[in-house]
Every structure is written in structure tokens, then in C-alpha cells.
Length: 589
Image (cartoon, rainbow, N blue to C red; front, side, top):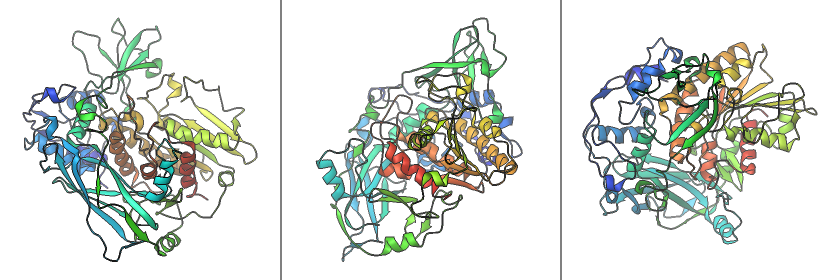
């Protein structure tokens, strides 16, 4: 795999920005009518790490770019092609709303109907052709779809009796694979792994024009309504952010960045123009957020230009039973830490899918558990487990604490977390099985108030693990949601720093097991987590960064929450969380 540094080097080139058409009446936010000739900074060399990066220079350079940093774009060819077309002047953006991809006019057609009918083990393939509201065929890609194949009979019955409000009414289902052909057409496919009546459910979540807007709004230096407020020792409150810009004739900036930990953080100085001597002197207390473009402006109106169901032309399909799925599952290798690390998690007879739900239970297509019917508590006996990340990994900690009646550790738990500072450090202990659980948050940016000790850098937490024998140490890391509205280059720097720290942990504590928990697919929208597309963008960056690190496992919760999405809350329900934990433990037990 090409390293981050090499990617950055290869993308350090002059970027000629082009004049674009502006249709202010079609869009809520104002977009620039012109972008100047500019270049993206070359921030490191092949021999340097992120600890050598000058975040001040990096931020100044990125703000000159219309769409922010470019280092993430090679991971997403469909978006990269689209942005290149705009930058080269080959297509206009923004465009009138009637020329935006329309879910109402877009067509979804089964590509191949088998004469003798479908059998378990076959594949369903559908073709999507996109059109705008004028009925004109789109000739470029970049639209963002959500597609899953589900067992329709159970779906309809449970919908009829109204037993579910959160979208987890499915008995069997799988997230579909989607190929963007860069010409306005897309191929959606999924293996048929259960018998009965199944159908595709496809939404056009964001037309390509909205995807471009999402990139624009999260680019470095753009005012997307999110501001952090910190308090200095004097009690004075000041604005802070990862990429805050110097303001002429105003206060100078205080640079609290910690490049060796992948952390960029700037605050305005106090009224006297002075800066505290250390980053820990700042305390995040609140944030002001005016993010409103998703769900309010013409590009992001639910059911019109956002989350538009695509009519399925061809009806449901009947699938006859066979022994394929049973034989496939029995032939899977035994789970081990490195199973499922690559982007194409498992390439076997079922294709590129990490798993699916079968009769309400997640069935991995990567590997099979070491034993059937294992108990969580037996699996974790004599283990010390670190859950590090945001509130969705805290859910893992709290689910186990509740299920097995963990107590606060008598010596390691400093104080009970308050309701307002949920991300405070926690330590739980289960005496019967000698299990110790830790929860630690990740460093800023965070959208929750709390003192510095409530948001340590992941690097700091990993450095606390000091043992020559890591065989009883398990670490699970996740980080994504709080980086949605931030230029991806800052996320790159953070996960690269975490990767280096993981490698150092493996060297000093042989036998330690480390897992990366993937992103969560959420279908709701809140101010600082406005759309799942931002999580989609970060998900591949996270996976690719750790792909080549030996001995690191990957828990593909994105695929799991594609079938069981969260419609109301960012956080999965407890039953889904326990299935996430079961997948994680299947690599150890």
C-alpha cells in the first residue's frame, strides 16, 4: 500500500481552478463564483511523519483550495472524477435544481432474469440509470446511493403490525455492492443467500451535485456553522478549531497542536493577545452550531433531493433453496485477528461482502467463530479490554457493564462520570471472571463539553499500556463521527498517528490484540453529524490506513448497519450493539 506521505507527495501539484456558474436562487448557502489559481501544500517528505507537519502552514494552504485537501480523493474514484470535471471546467457546479439528479426520474431495472428462476447461490444484478428533473440522462457519476436486499415477506408482515420504528425490522438482508461507471449509470449487485421472496430497496441519498456541496462545506476554512468554545484559566472564553484562520486586525492565534499525536488545534488568544503555556489549560465547555444546510436547502430536502426512494422496476424475485449458503458457511476459515482487514473483506464464492443477516442474526462471510455458542464472560476471562473512541464504542462498554454487572474499579476509577460529561474515563471490573474494562474517549475535536482529561488523544491512551506480555490485553479503537465536518486531511493525520502508536504497542507488548471498529451507518441527521455520506468518506480512510498493519483486525459495522440502519438516533440499539460485540469476540473465542 502506498503510504500517506507518498500520497501527499504525489498530490502536491499546481491546481488550476476554473470559473463556475452560480445559481444562488437554487441553493441556500452562497458558493464562490470564482476560485483563484492555487496549489496544495506539500506537507511532508518520504522520510517524515505527521510529527514534522506544520499545521499552521497546512491550514493556510488548504483554505486557498475550493474543495479543500486532495489526499483523500484517490480513495474515492467516483468523487475524484466528479471534482476533476468541475475543476477542469468540463461540467458546471452549482447548477439549477432542475438539472440535479432526480430520484423520481431515475430508473432501477433488473439486469438479468434467469429463465428457470433464481436459486440460493445466484447473484441479483440491477442497473441504475440516472436522469435529472427535466428527464435528461446524466452523463457523469458521483451520485450516492443506499442499497440493500431484504427478505420482503418478513419485512411486510412486521411493517403491517407496526412493531418497529428504527428500521431494524428485517429478518434477513445484505448490503449491496455498487459500481459507479462514471457515465450516469450504476450497477447494483448482491448474492442470493436465503430462499423466499426478496427485493431491492434503493435510495438516492445524495445526487452528485449535493455530494460536491458536502465536500465544499467540509473543506478547510469553510464556515459550516460549527465553532468550539474553550475557557482559559482566567475564565475568558475563546473560539477554537482544528483549522481556525488568522484574523487580521483581530486577536492572534494560539497553536496548541500536537503533531506527534495527529492533533491540530488552534484557539484565539486572550484579550491581551497572550496564550496559555500548554494546551491542557484550555477546557472545552460548549459549542455553537448553525449547521442547517442538510434538510433545509434545496439540495438537501428529504424526499425531493435527499433520501429519495427509487421505484423498483421488475418487482420482487423468488429464490429457491439450495445448500449453497450452508456449504459456504461451513467452508469458511476460522476467525483470527487479521480476518476481514482488507477493503474487499472476503472474496470467495459469495463475492466482496463481509457478512449478512440471516434470521435476525449476523452471519460473517469472512470467517467462522472458533466455537459455537461461546459466552461473552468466558471469552473475556482474565482479560483487560480497552474501548477507545466516541459514544458508539462507549455503547460497547456500557452494554457489557450492564449485562454482566461490572462494578467501578475500586482503585483505578477516579470519579463517577456525570451526565454532562459522558466521555469521562471509566474503568469497570468483574470479579467472578477477573475482567477489567476501560473506556477512553479520543482527543479534540469533540462535540461534548469536558475538561482535558475527558478527551485524551488515542496515542496517549495506548502509551499508558505498558507491559512486556500483551496476551491478555485487547484494544478496540474507533474514531470518525466527530470528524465529519472537518477537512479529511486532519482525519488522515490523526489515524496515521494512531497507526504508529499501535505498531509501537505491538512491539513493546507482544501478543496484544488490536481491533479497529468500523464506522456506523446512520440515516438520521443532527447538526454536527448531518449525513451518513461523511461517515462513508471516513470509513474507507480508516480501513485503508490500517490495512497493512499485521495483527490488526477490522470489525465491519458499516455493513451491519447498512442492513439495520439507525433512522432516529446516531447510536445503534442495544440488541444491535450486542451483535457487534459478538462479531468482535468471534475473533478470540
